[in-house]
Length: 183
Image 1 (cartoon, rainbow, N blue to C red):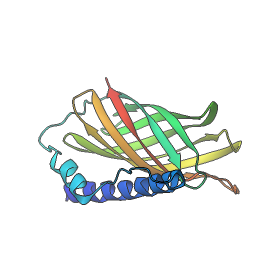
Image 2: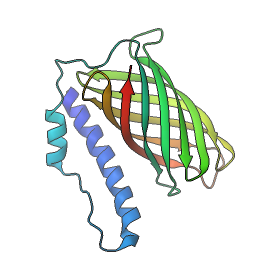
Image 3: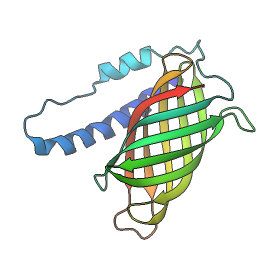
């Protein structure tokens, strides 16, 4: 059941990111494209070792990567920090900052809960902050999948939604990916 859940999340994130790639590269003409196949997802799932836990209790995790807003077409660099196991196992708090070009795009704080699957974890997060581009308060909700290669180094991908009341230029669906370091 755990692997089925991971497969579904990977397929959903891969399809969302593939749509983003197709949308952004279609204007460039004849560009080779990265396509994620079912075989790629099977290889990732086969690499999940449920007998090995590479996540340390009370760790602090720093993430860096890219994020893309499907609704607006804005892309940016994401920097985040999380502290895990506050008050209860697998409950964490985090902060994220997104910079788009030379401009600060957004910053927000969130609460997250993660489910450990050996060397992989799935996390649900919910929070709020400020959209600097629209000058409005925003909410965020999403899912993140992280695969650890060691106790310190991992790769992550996420899908979420940026919520803004009464905004015609809200963020909408957000996808992201990057690397993480835990200590």
